[in-house]
Length: 506
Ligand code: ADP
Image 1: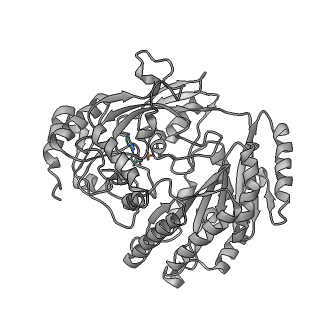
Image 2: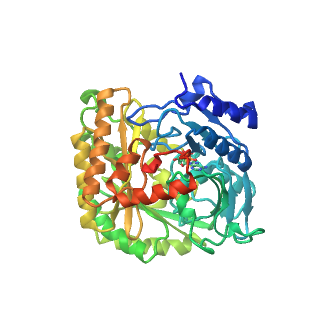
Image 3: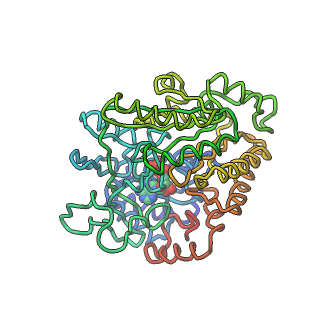
């Protein structure tokens, strides 16, 4: 495997500066760091470097500028569905920040924050809080427990507790810019800063936002807020029988969120998203994967798992169950306006695997269960499309009819979870396909592209994108966005060494 961009000299220089253990160029590693589940296939990286400190990241960036080698920073590399740990293009050098920089630098039990390095996973931080007997809890994704707090925040990821918005709950970063400068954002700019991880908006422009979904620097530290663990938590769930019920669900959920009566996001999960973690598509062999699952097979699986076409789930927190039960009762009455809603209590849901996943997520407990969905179709292909929709029933009906029709046209199974807040819901549309079948893989790619184009034509943009489609989505926006981001890039990373082209920014 030849290196593709003169990376050899760079890697030798890194080896010289940081030691042999900081560099790996074995064919197996170069391949493994380019593996992903996307339609465009695996990439091959030129090598992997493992910095052990901010100073070592500075060295890597200085040498990359000298040898003009593109770098792909990762933290834990669990960006499943978005490209895993693979770079956008072949031949880049992966900077695996998480392997050696994985310390929980500090936890402030009084003010409720943690300062973490890139390799700190949800599981590690959760375990550390439990080990200390801390009164704090962590908001986690329902994705892999090995995913990282810092990497997920940089991708604008979300969890499920009242602290669900991970970027909103982050406070203060340390970043090595592409031009070699090291910056501590916000109050971190003051020597001896006492406010770095507690005050979000400090003096001057708000710079933290520059480092999410971008390619201007490598983030080496992050402050992240933790929530006091409430003595009691109760989830509640409402199952609805029909696909079109989503419009009514959205109308029911919005006022509960607008008033903040319900402090969590609502998970509005469709049936395949619920039972997909435990089942495989029963018709796959018969259709050869050329058609999406039939309504009859869906009904049978819904019956087996005790769920309808949609289930809406959320949670309440408080001092005790006695205080929470009357609020659940009020919410139950609210949903009873719909004659179609079936209430599923917290206790009943604990015995249903698809809803137990939701309960763990609302409790901030990392879980591997959702990964079972990767087996819904054989062959391991997986990407996701994540547009948002305003919280209006009529728009939600339109948006979902659009998505469902495009999936059906391409013979794929419509699997979606809407994470609903007061004003908008993010729709995690999962695309499972057989990556060992080239025809099906090409179909999944066409399906994604059609979804992207049709949704943007209708005014719904995405909040994140898999590596195969960065350019596609940037191309849908007013060119001034790309131009502005590129202008910032040219100052913060003048030689374009950090992931050039990532998110369409070069
Ligand atoms: P996670 O830690 O959640 O598994 P990844 O390591 O897969 O996340 O990274 C998710 C995204 O964030 C990728 O686009 C990656 O390039 C970017 N990223 C990860 N770590 C850093 C970092 N320390 N600095 C800058 N960008 C990063």
